Image (cartoon, rainbow, N blue to C red; front, side):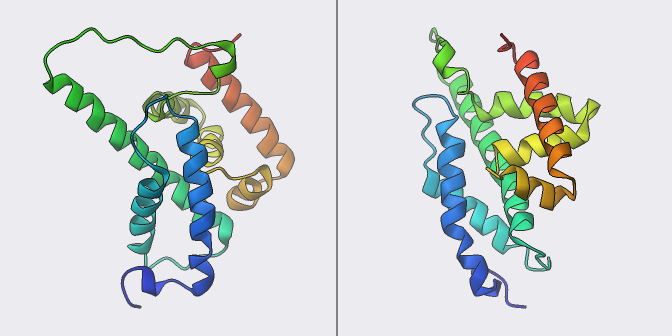
Amino acid sequence: MEHGAQSFDPAFAELYDELRRIAVACLRKERAGHTLQPTALVHEAWLRLSGLNRIEWQNRAQILGVAAQMMRQILVSYARRRIAEKRCWPSAPMELPAVTAGEAEVCDALAVHEALVRLEEAHPGPARLMELRFFGGLTEIECAEYLRLSRTTVQRQYSFARAWLLREMGNAN
């Protein structure tokens, strides 16, 4: 099989638009002023996916599930690089943006990632589901298909994971 984007089935190329939609949604959840653009996030995820030419893709949900993991890794790496760059600059007072009730859904990828790592230690299933929903933009049905769970189980695990993360991140009401 040829390496790179040409190795994909033409149907796979149609997922590019879906990946772009997911990237836009992921970045909408980020803090204001985030400098990573959706196109850059999609292209990086696309490059990583194209390097996985030994995988026999079973369905769209599987591809989007893997893309969710990749987008999470990319956003976390990007956030860590930005933090490292800030440490290199002379100290300057930095203010954290105030979070209003309307902005409760907005958070940065690194904070979500760190909370997900803690959730993974205690509850790996709900953590994986949250990764698929938050970073991958998968629907309940797509998550159920990808994880081979019933929709009811997905709903229950998602509710648990969301409540756990909100509490863990200090945003619970």
